Image 1: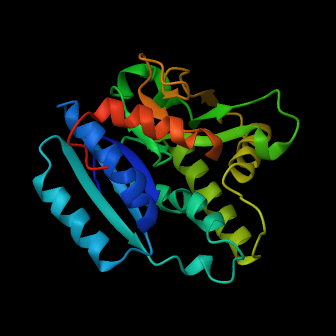
Image 2: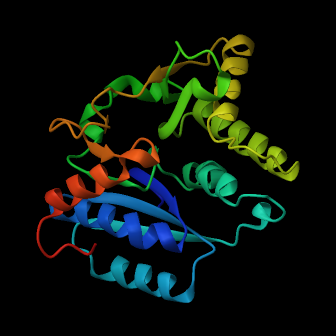
Image 3: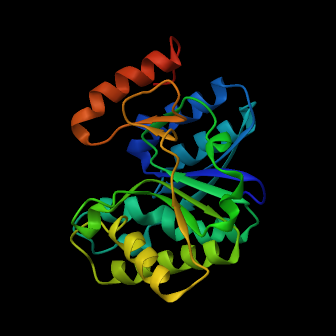
Length: 245
């Protein structure tokens, strides 16, 4: 586990490790500045674990740490992707308890264009969390976009992280047929806002996640499977010749 500083957290199975995680790691490394990245490996093969361990030793700028998740709570689900999209929320409280100051959880199908940390307001640690809120959406499962979530080690943020993790674990035991990684954080925030005066959240900075490959964005990422080909093309242009992908 990382034990201090500002950390980016992603999760992936073997397929996403090769399709996206390696490209994300390369994009961070190429910027030439220290960044901490924790990868949650979902039911990994021994080959993926070995490659991750080797990368952790050989990278110059990325401080790479990793965890292995056997995905026990995914047993019995009709679609394992329901667990895969929610797994990082289960790990988040443990990372914060290990001493991490700020934790940014993002989708692994992304590349770093520039560091995200200068974009985050200095007073963020007074907040319990930051999300990509979509308040105009009518359906609760669309009111938060889970491609970026920001937490810190304040008591309010750690309570929120534990509340989301607990609600996800309980929901998984009921074998849901749909994704829960957006609807449960939304309800956790809604209920906490009503119940606790000291609870507050903020919006993820608009320039942090670039869905249209804006040059000022910290990350370029894909929104929807129909845009995957465009993302891969833009990622490969960013990484240039000799890319791992």
